[in-house]
Length: 255
Ligand code: G3P
Ligand code: MG
Picture 1: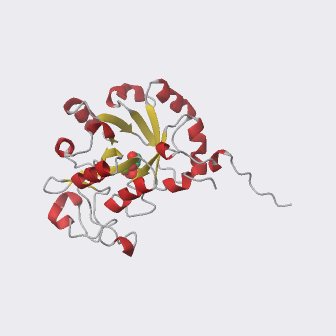
Picture 2: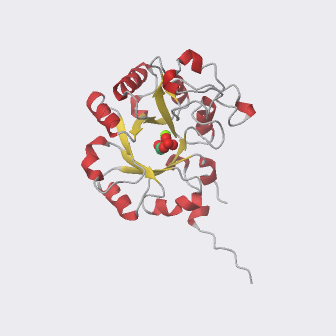
Picture 3: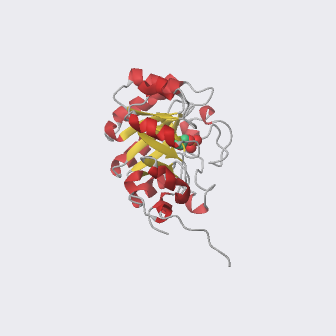
């Protein structure tokens, strides 16, 4: 007799939207890191969104993930070599679907305004590459936050760059900070002062012992980017507080 695999009870339990953070907006439903993608977050009932921030050639913070333009726009070359005015001539939506051909790479200022409008909490990833001027990027982000109507207490700065987090700690200590790791290193407590709020790691790299240690240290724990609720199910049991996911809608209703 053919037997079906047993369905996990946990995987079919709806998860509260308060425990989900949209990754790059809701990247499974709209082009990543665009205003359309961010709009989906509140439409799904979530209150947290993660986006990536970098600088244009002329020093304007924009929400964009890659070093180069080709994957997510109809342009070419490096973001850091492109002015904001040139960037805003590009189509940042058609790579996902023709329905989104009007989407542009948004400025951080526009994203903050939308987060304020939608009353979202923003996980703002300071995205650095080898040639990133970390001080210039962080300073531009701070200026943008100061000019924004979004309450700073609704912003969480996250980064894989420990130097960026150190800069934030020293220059804008009031901003909440999260360390991003792929796998949490054994000596993670050496960096404890760089995280004021949470530790984030890849969902496949976390161990139960690490989860316990992070929670025992008084920090929140978040995992990126599980898009299958069944894969995420054991992590809730380990105490993970939030999943950063491209597909939050899959968690919101029982299968
Ligand atoms: O914040 C988690 C996640 O965004 C980190 O990786 O490459 O998607 O920015 P990435
Ligand atoms: Mg990111």
